[in-house]
Image 1: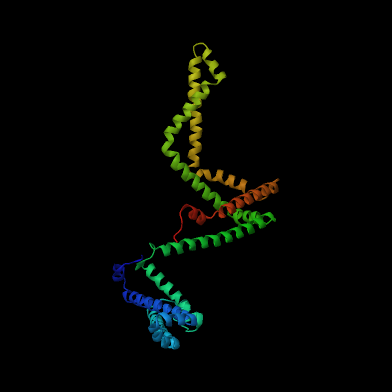
Image 2 (image 1 turned 90 degrees about the horizontal axis):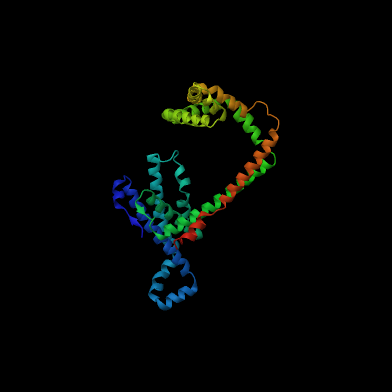
Length: 340
């Protein structure tokens, strides 16, 4: 069952309009119930059946049935009065940019008031709009009802089916353009990337400096110790260097000094390289890399590379299309039976 939260009614300054919504909701349900009953009552078989088993009901309802348009117009007059009052309030409160927007936005209220045939059943749209407004302002809570879960489940399934078809159609169109030799890559490279090489180099330079600063500086000492240990192990495994220890008197000293010097040089060079990457001095290096990836003139073999890139993108799009075809609502349907 849905719940009503009167505390939210008292908190909101639109209390009077919520009361009107509840009143109109009751009148709309009553009116639609009468319309449905009158349509059913129009069949002679139904009238005979009611006359046989409930003659008193037939005697009382016959005058209403004969003059149903009059009784329906009573409801219509109430609905139109409420409509024009809300329109006047919308104009006074400047709810919409223009005063005449209200009837266009709430067109279903007007069309449903036409007391002709099937147009009367459009009043159900007004019921839906009132329920939605009450749910939106948390005056009522329908999320716990089985009807809400049922509608929400199949509404999401419908949207997923629709959006999947659109996505697959779009991806298929992109594949067709790519495979037919669309100048997409040349336009991206020459019209977008190449004119912005300096900006790209600046951005990559700043990001590399920031990443190096955050990851290298706090671990500078540990990295130096690690590098010296690795160099020391590598030097001890070197056959030529190990022969130095056989030199009389000075052999072990030379070997030890050389190992320390090489380890210090390697660690210093790597630290200097990382220091450069962590500072603005990396800009020239990054700029050279960007220029190598985005040359002003295409090098030899660029066509083969583009063809390989086209095939790669086509395969990626195929994988995406395959993933789009996976229906999550069907998985949910198999895992847990939806509300009935």
